[in-house]
Length: 532
Image (cartoon, rainbow, N blue to C red; front, side, top):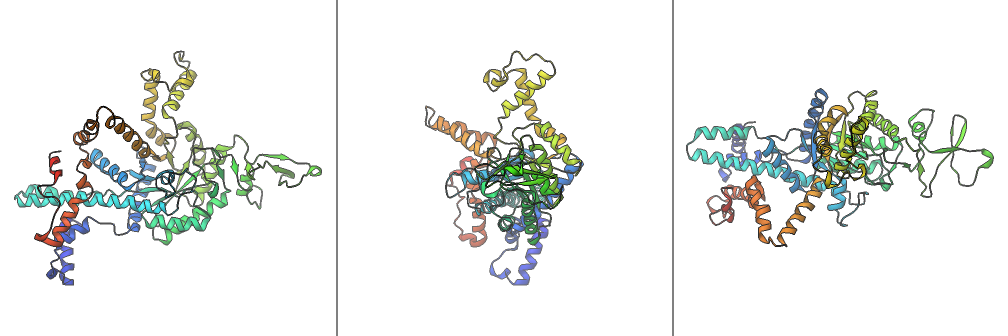
């Protein structure tokens, strides 16, 4: 609906309801409605699910059309990210949000900083989703409010050309509200618990939920040791629970991202139930580290499985966990992924120990032999030492090609001494093109960085503290923060506007007219930044 049509529609509604005589202005009401197009979190989930499905189809047609996101731990961070994207690229297309369970645990729990082990309050996850979208909706209201003021100024000046140009920008305004891929960990309990939490996350606005195949009460960060997986049927119950949650809430296009941690998980908590040779349970159990047992030598407390007429004892640890055979990780990942896609998942996530395109592609090729349009979400994790990994990849490639690498020591390639070398330059170029190359070769539809804003907050605060509390004093802030905000056009330099002061003044005008006591008068110090 165009801006003018919205005004006319609102005015007709006011006339029918008799509100026009009560000092309610149709233009003001239409503007407020335009600034708040999503009435509920479910409106957001339905809209963003459609966007994400369209992007998935576009990627299937052209792998260059991959999508990206950065993990955000606060609504303000998400808001500034999307404002920056619109400023630099003119559109939010194919740029999403990611909500990391790691950052919720580390930064948003009432217990204080926690490791990524599902110990934080489960309700903190939907609460953060709601917060993220509250800030993105405010970004819409702020941007449109500025356009409405531009429109009024153009009309007051009698500049109809400018007025039509601004009205066209209003009619074609692109929302800051984008899809979110939200981390539900291992479901925080059984399938029913997963379903209940999924509903809360969807109601808050999430269109895509990521769930992993670890044991819920033994959950570990995907880049740490000690991970324990569950048999496929246990995991599929939770995938079904999430799908039912989407369907119940009227979001049939909701996306399920099935994550497998099997590549780095060497343990399982239970032996899978099997009724026939070759079924899912039997395949899962086939990866267990077992030894054949002589029935005459059975000892107390042993657990056995039978296979092909043999009695086998799975290797059980003092923790009561069972161990998989070494070297089976990739095979287990492939089976996990095929099974998840065959039972309702839409996208895959393979947690790897390093960013290596051919390692990922090798597994995806096998998955696509069964499901040709299989697609991945990939964690471009800060847990990887990207510099060292890619320098070693180049070193290994040069060695295999017979190139002279005598000037380099492989284990010391992180050293600053190598920063300007040909090897380092090639490694950096591989890092630069990693996402595009992996999208094309390894089926990665969505690239995300889980924890970037955790690290940028730490880095920027360290830099400010070093300067401000050192010899630079106040210049440490002015030169490195405020002046850079002005030079780079960072909207937050006008922090009162970003916090909603001008939106509030607009509302005061609507509600009180000439009696409004507004904040944006001539004595507001933000006027010093008018030319910024």
